[in-house]
Image (cartoon, rainbow, N blue to C red; front, side, top):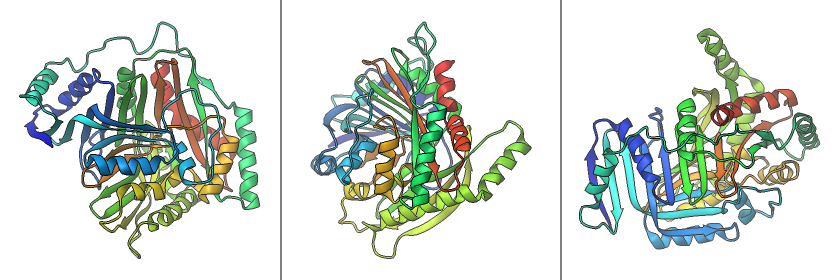
Length: 433
């Protein structure tokens, strides 16, 4: 049983910053922040889970079965991530590409201390609470300087960002993918490339703060797992379950922003009417509808919103919303497994796209294009898509971020390359400045 207490906090933004600084003392940290972005499906403004009471840490083999058993056994909140390579547990595919980050394929923990923030109310839920531990922690949190900086953002030397796939090789690989499309092997595939820095030290908290400040996305997250970190400024929800309703919100279609209001409005309108971008989005919507139908009550899958353009700090994005109703007896992990990996990061048909992606990409995706989130004791869940994210292994002194784009029959390799640079801008800016 958890000890629970609701706390009213007047300066909630200050408290959020203090809370995240306080969390750094723990080895297991998951921080989720909506940045007060107005959205239809929102349960909390921010969530912090720290200090593992129990853990599941595994490779892809029977990973979903293990996660299902773990959630059933704990009957509690669990927080963590699903990597893209869990596809190997679901389909007859493999991942043999280079991996310098060395994250586990699946990691979840049951937190001793949990904070749920909505408006100015903070709900603290503690396992094995001793005396007035909640009150003592809140007092300690409020005493922290919210802008304290323990070290510089990175070391003395400038960070040197390298490309895993250089421009000419990128064009060659995209053209090979277009060849698959023209032969009818696939209709669309998400092709990704890695940017990385070796022998590099960063301050994960300060780097996350800077990345989040630039982007202010609705699905930001900070993960600390020992010496491994995920600093995510994701704008995309993968999947949410609330009672009997499941929602997926794939993003496909990107346009840059402009400081000139008139030009920015033109970019927005051009994206909304772009035939190629709309076709990308609609193909993934069809894939998501098919995925959701595997566990949905018959006839309940609906497209609530198709190809709507949303504006974020860095880019305009085209987002669709697909929903379904599920039977109460359906285990939440079965819903996740039947839709994973998310269509926006694979392509259509999904299995063929994943096989072609694996052959053409140079790096194992790992946490990138996986999902971060939580499951509740009653089987609700909410997960983002891990994009616009910096991954860091402090032991290996290795920093990585990847970006990708959907390749369709109408794709121009140069434009796809330029779109990748737009998506990579925030991460590069944070690391190089």
